[in-house]
Length: 351
Picture 1 (cartoon, rainbow, N blue to C red):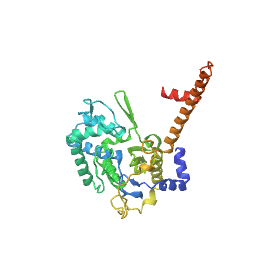
Picture 2: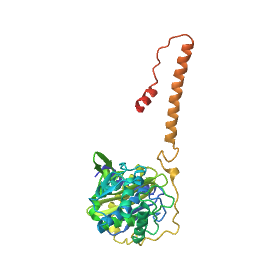
Picture 3: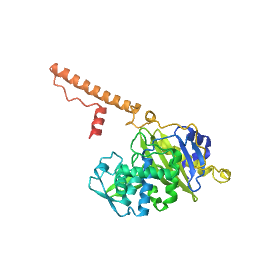
Picture 4: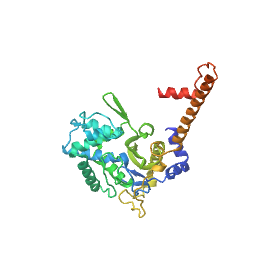
C-alpha cells in the first residue's frame, strides 16, 4: 500500500476535507449495483468537456455490435476532422485509421479529430451523429444531458450532470465489457507516435482501470475514474476542479473512501443512481473559467509573474546597451559586456 493511501486511511478528517474542499459536483458509486456511496450537487448542469467522448465511444461500440462498423475497417481523416483543435492525433486529410485504433486514440489521447472521424463513419456527418448521441442519452435515462459536438469541444448548450455521466459510465461497463482494456490503457502507439493518457490515476492509484478525463476553460478539470479491488469496482465522477492535480487527488480520495467503508457499513444503504432524490435547487449551466488555473483561460498570477520576468530582462538588456552607448560616445573602446545571467538563461530556453 502506497504512502498516499495510508495517509487517507490514517487521517479520515483530511479525507473529509479533501472531499468537501471544492464546490464542483462529485459522485461515488458501485459500478455493479449502482449504489451511491457519496453525492454532492449531482444534478447541477455542467459542461462535460471530453467526458462527452464516453458517449461517442458508447455509440461507436453499438455500431460495431450491430455491424455498422468493423474493428478492422479503416476510417478516413476528413477536412472537418483535420481542422479540429488539440488534443488530437493530427494525421493529414486523406490518411486513415482502423476503427480499433481510432477507439483507442479517442479514449487514451482524447483525440478530437478521431471523434469526428468516428461520427462521420457511423452517421455520415458529425451533426447526424450528435442526434444519435442524444437519442442514446435519452434511452439511458440521461434526462439532463444535451450533446452538441462529438468530442466535447466548447458549445453553449452542451451539458450534462454528474448523475447522467454516472449512468453513462455504468452502461458502458455493463453493456460493453469486451472493451474494458481500452479504458485502462495508460498509453498507445500509432506507428511511431506515442500517445499517453491524461488520467493520472491509471499510473498512481492501486486498482485503477479507467475511465476518462475532460477539460475546457468553462468546465474546469473533470474526470470519471474507476478502480477495482477484491472484485469490487467503484467509480468516481468529479467535475470542475481548478487543475489536473486537484482532479486526481479528489477522485483518488473518493475511491479510497469507498474501498475503506465497504462491508457492513453499506448493508442498509439502498440509494442508487436512479433512486437518489433529484435536487430541487440544482444549479444551471455556468462557466467556472475564472477559477481555473490553466494559463490559457485567464490572466493568472503565474502569467503575470512571467510577464514581469520578461519585462525585467528587457530592462537589464536596455541598461547594458545604454552603458555601452555612453562609453562609445565618450570615446572609449568598451569591451563586449557580459550578458546578465538571466539573459543567458532565456537565450538558452529560446534555442
